[in-house]
Amino acid sequence: MDEELRSLTERIRQETGGSAAYEHLAATRDPGELAEVLTAPGQPLWARELAAFRLGLAGDRRAFESLVLLLNHRDPQRCAGAAYALARLGDPRTARAAAALATNELRVGYALHPVRLLVQLRAPESVPALITTLERRLRPHDPYRRVALACVEGLGALGDGRARSVLTEALAHPALAEAAVDALARIPKSE
Image (tube, rainbow, N blue to C red; front, side, top):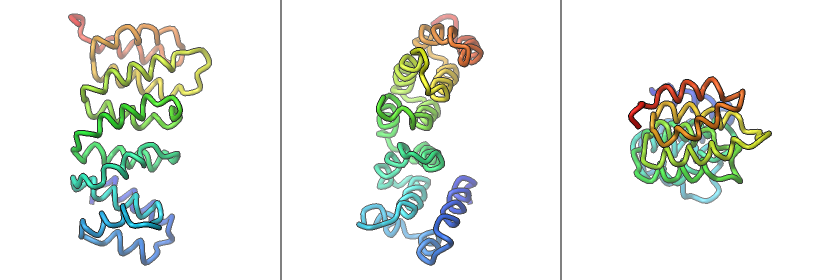
């Protein structure tokens, strides 16, 4: 069993008290039954999460919408699980959705996992979205330093010359300076 799936199922088992409904959903091998959970009315969040995660790992694109909603959830564990499944889903809409979530100023408090997913995907949308998100985080007294740091580290990992300017600006922020130096060093000089 995949370690992330094991972690998610254990968390949900504890959340549900190991109910019979949980045990059934965790054991089923029928993708149609899992997909039904995503659209049936009255399903608890844990059931939708487990079904979407399992379908995502299996590459079943019926999980896409549910996983995107979970990627933007207030619970970091749900976001992390959704990001993990979306990275493996292989749906071409994933990068656009992650970029939209990462750059949404109304939900910036939940942007950490979309930012990390964009880095992992290395899609055409990744660098522009990370630059936009980081530029907004460079305002004085911005409370989202973890998001800013993830952007700086991600831009370094992506090594794209378009990030040079915003990373240079990040040098002036003590919480980001060291990571910005490292990120700038990873951008090839020819860009």
